[in-house]
Length: 608
Image: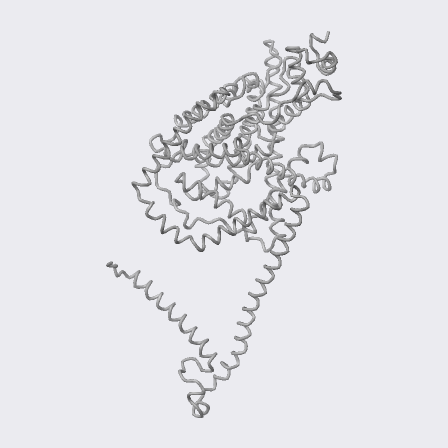
């Protein structure tokens, strides 16, 4: 092949030649010292005889004095490597013996350690196989990278996915028709974002389709498959236990009574603890590896740039009840966020960061050691905690003022109960319905969506937890014309819908953070921040719609006859369901004593 002999190429060749020459000179130097020759001399003392002794140069004594040091250094390097291998082998053997003993004694108690060990072994095996077989696999896959073959493969895959989705909707929604409403909700969200898109003709439908497809696939794994459901339930419990360790530090600083009763001392310290842990994980390099693997999958399928994919993958681990649903929502939101952002604001020019070359995550080595990394992470979180606390104080005070003003105005026309929450329950009721929420639960869900959008997710989740606690306590569904709790399906869909940072109180935080990184683009950030807010809200709603399509009731149905015919000391959700069923259609199987038990907890005409 003819190569152009440009000055740049000649310079590269000359630099390569110089580097090779220096490397060869270094090798000759070490060989000459080992053989007892001076550098540049081809003869050894045995070959030259007495003449060599008489004519040897004076500097040779200095070279000869270096030989023991070089040999000692090589000896130390070899034995240090051997010592490391021995220590690693002993530690691995001891850990394997410990894991085996713990598993034999109580496998359920050792399950977390077993899972972490499997993850570590998988990572090591992946690295080893990539190093040994990576180049060979790339050579095998290279013929498959043909443009036409890849195009036909993508078309076949898209057709299969479309037919699979249609078949799914036909077979699965025949038992639960409300799932069709959630599917219609996704279609409405995509249509609205496309109608408001900045550049309609530049939308990459491959990115949008792959993003929504990955979101749906993750949802199927998390919600429908038994291994995925159990895995995320287990992860949720472990994270709840892990975050509960925050109470140790909070109780010491603020007192146990303050931690249990005050929101700021109960929730905000979790941000400090979480930031500290993430800083440590970045320091050891674990988070970089996980984020890069997740971003590689989305970049390979969705054809997005390296920078935006890394950013979205990293946001999985920095988002703000039901821990398993929150984890699932955070993971599912990553591909959906890329898809809908490309739909609302598509690119019109080739990005400078299309490939991953030159785009690297920081090594997390700004800190000198692990303790400094932990301390720095805690210190960095102080500003975030301050921003959250200040926004909560300001917006809750503003909400109280707005509600007072609305109540004053409503009293003039006989609507004393007029409030911001009441307006949201009407204005956002169609949105809640499109998520797949039952119509009787829509006012409550719409109110929570409004709180999340105009205040923040902390307040909304706190309100949702109150509704959930009342349901679990077996409180009557309607008290004084006001709904006291919502169904389990509505709770889960609301948990997905509230999981996100898209709200008006966070605009200042986001603008401040982005402007500090790129001050010259402050006007650009300010111009698109409302579009980003709407897109982020749609991502959360799309998550809830996917959960609505895939949701199916889990858990055994309570045996009402056995439950009501036993001694019941307190109400619960199961007791309420059974009593409600007994009140609606009394059966001979339900004794008068069982009805008396229900009448102790709930008022009904049958109790008179």
